[in-house]
Length: 279
Length: 322
Image 1: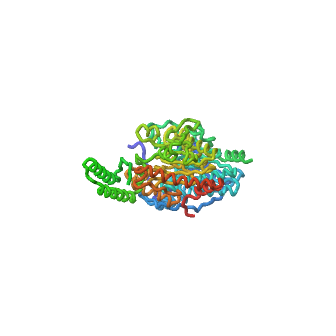
Image 2 (image 1 turned 90 degrees about the vertical axis):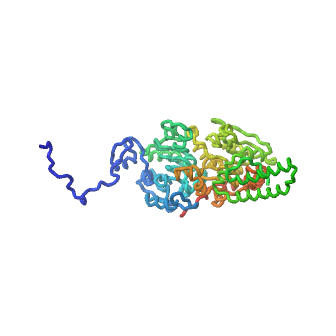
């Protein structure tokens, strides 16, 4: 005689009546705990352990602007293919496929609106679009956003999240470093604040241009920030990198950041720095 | 045709063969008392034809190889020749040290003072190490900026000679802010009140080159390259192997002709037949002529107009669909 008796025979729910668990209802945190994604969103996408999960421009705009109300600007600017670049895939095909997959036009978006009652233009990079890489579109959108801030006489904020220059636009990408720096001199001449917010990751040509040129350079905690990527440095010096190397905290210690801002404190901190600079 | 070249790349081998023939003809005429004038003349013509044949059909990758030719003149060679030795090198960033991969100082061209800045490569193993293969650290970029500000103070034009495989990707470079140092230079160079001329004389690799590359005029010598990444690194990222460097060199459109076609530079300075390494004296002369012409032109412009045009030029770079 069996110890336990089975009343029902295996699974009896017919397939068509099966309830699907929606995708992304639950997320795994940095330490492996499972939490509700709604909970994570409410917490500015910072998990209970304080880890800042990677988010896109939409999420940042929602966090920064009052009542998540803002106007997207220059949203139609898209990539040309000046070099007819082709590796194992045509660059134009890669762009179209990425646009389809992400619903984005390119690797950054710009918006205008109010944060804590103060006008602000924000350009935010989207890492989901070819690693947030900077080509002509990113350069042009930053340039136009700076012009817009000058026109509206309001501060400009840049949220960097990028692997660096976009290889498929070669010389054009390189010159976007010069272009964005040139435009920042114009913003500066108008005495309008430029706030650079560096998030995980910010490397390469982005670090070596606008990301490091803020009137105030601030960063999310524990973000990877550097010029050369960790793998390249490791190969160059032939040694393992020290713990905490190229993190926000490391850069703060070395003198390249003004302070670190937890995403949950971003709004009040923005209010404070803009007020202190402009009142 | 005159050449001082002694080291030959694989695709330059046919040139060497003719040169060897010329040498044996010369030896024969000297030692054997044979009149070799006619043969020598013929061989000289053959040399020129071969040289033209090779150099008019260079692939982008071959140009990259030429830009790294071990006999190519380096920054200090150019400066010594342009100033006839009237050059005073200035050292140090006044902060952490003196970066030997980045050199600078005042010199004179026909009595007129110029601030020269440039990455310096070394020729022999020891020198190469001392110069860190032309890869500057943050203090190099900061020394360059210090010297540029010095030039601005005394109202002297700046000439930047660019030749680098990239800014150094090292541990200490990161600690001392390689990204910030380059970014600061891009920003400050836009605003400098004196004329700036930048010339790619060898390799123009990415941010490391651009860090001293903001000029009213940016020129490339004929056999140089300028891009966001080296063909080897591009190949290893896109094809996960270094074997596709030729293809990468083509795709990157990194030659002087391509860069000019895309309006990312202002002009090309022709090299003597066989390249700058075949006849440095002629190269120096050409560069001197171009520099003098452009320094005079830029010197006549109003300061505000000059810096505004510099900012506008870089602000307009890029191709997008609106």
